[in-house]
Image (cartoon, rainbow, N blue to C red; front, top):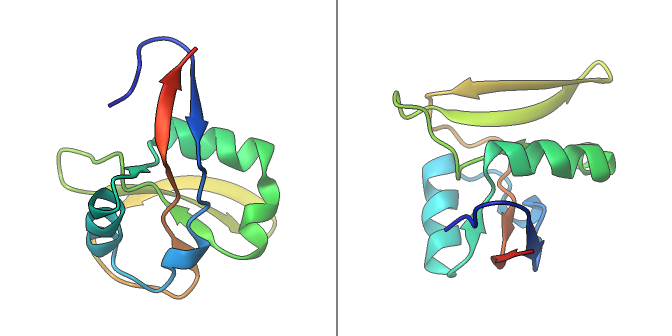
Length: 106
């Protein structure tokens, strides 16, 4: 659940521990752990504040889904950031899914 207005995310996990796993499995595991998968906006903010995340992996933002079932993702290629989406449910060693423990209204 996302609070209306500003909020603070606690217990951040950048997704490094969820590499080489299908997005659908990552999402199910995050929810099973009673955590919240990142939304697109949260991933963009994470990338701005902590750009070093791309030194280890790209981010599938499994908390946001398009009507097609596609998952948005953030990546770095040739030193340039990108935002796109994929409807494939493939596992790749350089992709993880960030999450937070909870969202607290400000």
